[in-house]
Length: 117
Length: 113
Image 1 (cartoon, chains in turn red, brown):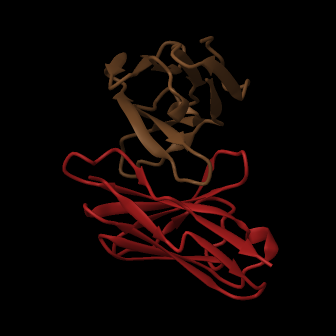
Image 2 (cartoon, one colour):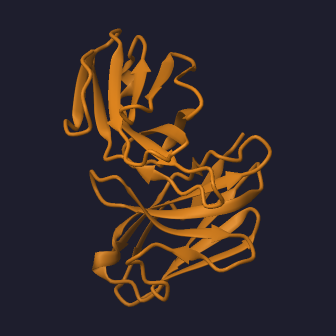
């Protein structure tokens, strides 16, 4: 149980294009999803917290117009990197937190590696 | 195995030995702690958690110890196996409405065959 998937696992795009990353909780309903960014050999940096049906809460320094988050259902959240540039290249990881025994724990997806050329 | 703090990013242990990974957390108000294992190119994998009303919790081959007095958390892995090689992160949070995790900087565990 508590499986989180991400799609795509890897994406290469040209500078200026937008990229959408999906995060799904496969076997539980996620009341909250989180989006992280991770640079090589570094820890995870929280970008935003996403609650179903409401606007995402962004961490300080994260541009909300650059990283669009939509949490349309209890099992799906999307992160869109708009007008991507090489400095947006990174490993993006989502996590999901649910209820009924899974309330506190965040379960992570496998990550999406983005390379912007 | 020797215990190390997060200032020493790599811990090397012999297969079959016990490993101890330490973490100093930042917020004395944190009331829930989790250890995650991250293999290269993958997302973090939940290992074990502990609430602040406990000081020890055991899982399969793993034990987490919590010392709130000095804000210290440790992960003990018994009979370390090659498959345990990964980066280990501790994370702390407040069980309020946000449940935001604050991650430590991570420790790389290398298991020598």
